[in-house]
Amino acid sequence: MIPDIASDHGRLRQPVVPIIYLVDDDESFLRALSRRLRVGGYQVECFNSAEEFLARPRSEVSGCAVLDLQMPGPGGLELQEALAQADEPLPVIFLTAHGDVPTSVRAMKGGAVDFLRKPVRGEDLLDAVRLALIRGSAEREKRRKKRHWGARYERLSPREREVFVLIVRGLPNKQIADVLSVSQRTVKAHRSQVMHKMGVQSSAELGRAVEWLGDVLVDAPSPKPSTG
Image (cartoon, rainbow, N blue to C red; front, side, top):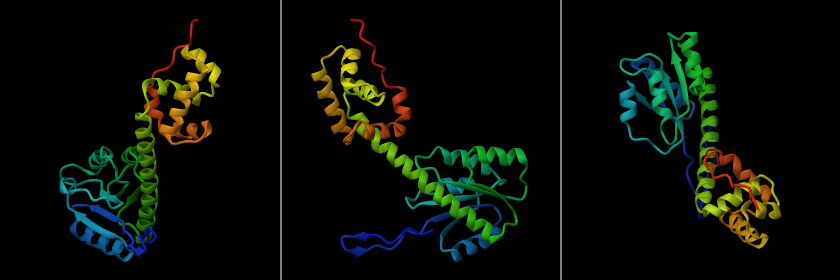
């Protein structure tokens, strides 16, 4: 639940405690949930409406949002959609006394971790929160890797990007030279620059970067085969 204590130049840093954001217009329910989660070891912040929550400056501390489905003003589903637009979306858990199958399906399709009925057992809530934090951590790591490889890919010249595409397709230097109508020596020079700028040592390692560059490579220029 709580990250391990890390070392910073020989000094121990305190573990960062995840923040659980509770959004519900029922004050007594908020207080009960807040107490249960704090006993479970979490920081908790409570909000009475979606607007109040969205107006709060976002913290960089990891966490998740526990949302009531029906509230005055924007409801939980609308808040879920707004959160999904953030650079670092929070994982969402729904709590409701008025759910139905179509609504729960919409919530889960929108990426909700769980859809729990009120009144909720404390252990069920804690289990859902633990799952949400695990999922949130995995999603943050995916976004970090995508940004990492995307930044490296942006350093490649247009010709190096063409060579990159052909390398990950498995073409040897001779075939790459034929496709691009250049010499093998030129291909070797471009290949060396691609490996250097991408920070990899082998074609296999370069291939592993492709899964994080999927959206980028869709728009990458496809080299045209040589007609000569």
